[in-house]
Image (tube, rainbow, N blue to C red; front, side):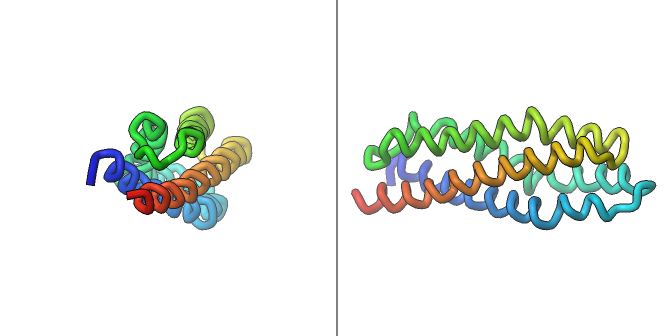
Length: 150
């Protein structure tokens, strides 16, 4: 297997994982924030933040950046326009995370639960989840295209 095909296969698996984690976060983790008692929220959030680094943050940022590189390293059977859509999904996920989700998390961790940062976090999360899911679906299709052409 050449580098382009290995890259595509690894990226599809990683992005599908990140999409699944994002969906779980959207449906389970973030809604639970609202159920944490106000006096316990900061401690809860600190512990949550420490725990998600290896299973959420590192894979997500790796996926975002790797999606951005796909147009440069794609197999020949993957159309540039499809690879560009995957890259756009990575960019959208990255931007939603660094411009809205991370600042919201920082505010929630510093000040405790508040409606404004929580709403911004939920919006950014939905955008990120849609971008990850869309990229993952396109990548599965790209894998089928690339490996069928071999």
